[in-house]
Image (tube, rainbow, N blue to C red):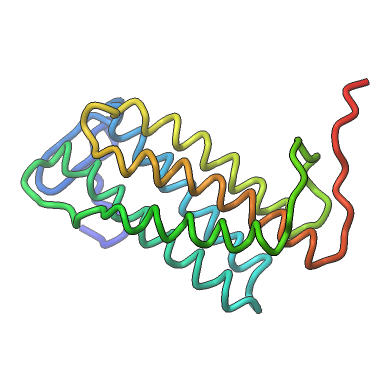
Length: 180
C-alpha cells in the first residue's frame, strides 16, 4: 500500500482515524469544502503575495486554523481523537487585523465590482470560497463550537478587507455597480 493512495476509497468510503465513513456524509462534504478553501489560499499566497511577509503570515495562520477546524469535524466522525481547542482568541486576532486594514483604507459603504487588480481579484475569490464554506459548515451547527462559525464569518471579511487594501496599495480605482 502506498502513501498517496490506500485503494480502500473506491467504494465511496473514507478511512478516518481507523473508522470508515461514507463519502456521502455531510461531514465529509464539509471537510472537502474546507480543503478546497485551504488549497485556494495556498494558490493566493503564492500567486499574488510571494513578496508580502505580512500577507504570507496572515494566510499561513489562516491555513493552520482551517486544519484545526477540519480536525474538529474529523473528530465528529472518528470520535476517538481530540481536536486542538479552537480559541476565541483566533476570532479576536482576525478582527484586529481587519480593523487595522479598515483604518488604512477608510472604505466607503457599498458594493464593489471585483477585479480592480489581479491581487484583489484573487482575494475576492478566496472571500467567495470562504462564504460557500461557511454555509457548508453551518450544516453542522449543532455539532461544533460557535467560535468556528464566527471565525469563518470574520475570515470572509478579512479577505474582503485585504482585497480593498490591495486596490489601494496598487492605486487602482474600484468600480461600483450602477444597476442600470
